[in-house]
Amino acid sequence: MRARLPELLADIEELVTCESPSADLAAVARSADVVARVGTRRLGVPPERIVLAGRTHLRWRFGDAPAGVLLLGHHDTVWPFGSLATHPYTVDGEVLRGPGCFDMKAGLAMAIHAVAALADRTGVTILVTGDEEIGSPSSRALIEEEAAGRAAALVLEASADGGALKIARKGVSRYEVRVSGRAAHAGLEPERGVNATIELAHQVLAVSALADRALGTTVTPTVASAGTSANTVPAAGEFAVDVRVRDAGEQNRVDAGMRALMSIVDGSGLRVAGGPNRPPMSEEASADLFARASGLAAGLGLAPLTGVAVGGGSDGNFTAAIGTPTLDGLGAVGGGAHADTEHVLVGELPPRAALLTALIGDLLPTGND
Ligand SMILES: [Zn+2]
Image (cartoon, rainbow, N blue to C red; front, side, top):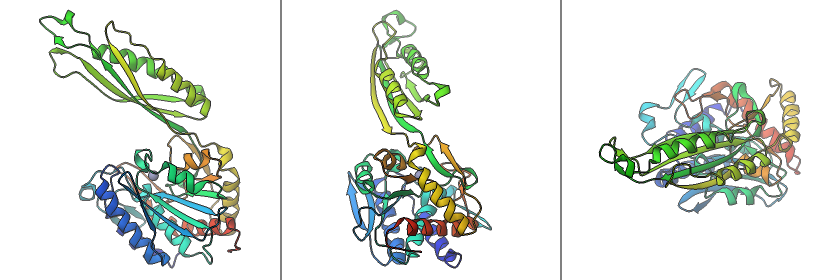
């Protein structure tokens, strides 16, 4: 893998310099072309192009082995179009930067090179989706179908702090709460209005009370808006809610709580949309794979692996929820996902890609070594 580093870096540059914000379908389609080009160059065969609801996903299947290994990644990013102008691709010594480099274009290049280095790829499937950052609305069924019955789903999301693998992830639910009232002039006849901002304030507090800190359940009201002008009693408002849970019971409890919300201000209306998105990924889903990876890392002379439970969800939540052993955070080592400080540590690319090759080989029944 050290010998492959120049090619690996060239591929990461090619991937990062094609911007792919999830919401821009044309950009995601262009990015899929780049991923396909890079992968075809290294793997010798083009991927299948799977377009679902306008979103472009790619799949390489090597042989038909149901008990094989799924490598899972995404090529969309949270970075809006034009981010390359303010956050250009650079490699400065040990540090590589650029929009989406850490989450997770470096991981994609690592997966491609890890599979290219295998002696026998039979039983390997690489799935690269284009809508992970918005909750995988079009790719979820495809991911579950590809993961079903596999020996493992290896997820190329970026590692956690210090290169830790992600061995458990919280489940994620998302809601939109919409309140309605009645507009009136705030100076002339405010008593004729029904104030949606006051109703919204009550609901924000009721929603946040559904959290349970001891159980690790967070319920966070996020984006909020209400009203139309400073001198009008607001007729409508809305806010978004982000929910993170460690277990399915909590996800259901919060969901029931959200659906039981009642309007407080006389005459106001209330509607709740949304629900659970990603189920929690428990440590049981990753324990065997983590032990296996740790043993292989020791055999390769790498530093001991660490694993952490994280609050962020990924497509690994879906593969774990259908019973497929899942290990996540196998992509780049670095930091600053979704932030100005996003970066990848160049020196960690070869050992992590080598670990990936060893892990895939070890999981396949075909006797790679
Ligand atoms: Zn990601």
